[in-house]
Image (cartoon, rainbow, N blue to C red; front, side, top):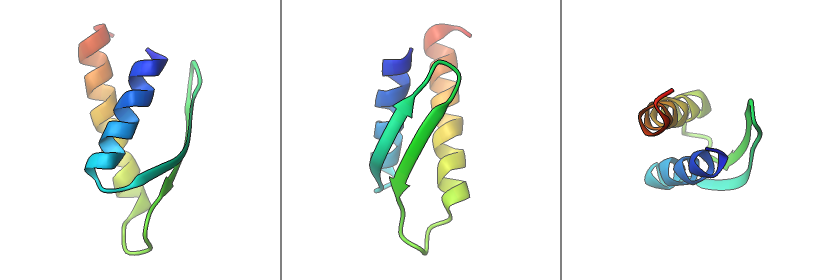
Length: 63
């Protein structure tokens, strides 16, 4: 599941046109560092990435 989350987060940030600087997936949380220009809302970007990743993980692993 960790590899799936890692791949999914990279995919989501690339679609948003942003670059992942660091990503560390732990069993119960994720550390994520993304390069974001000042004009972009960090909270909205991360909210979208988290929401889409959560839905896809839920569908794939039937959580």
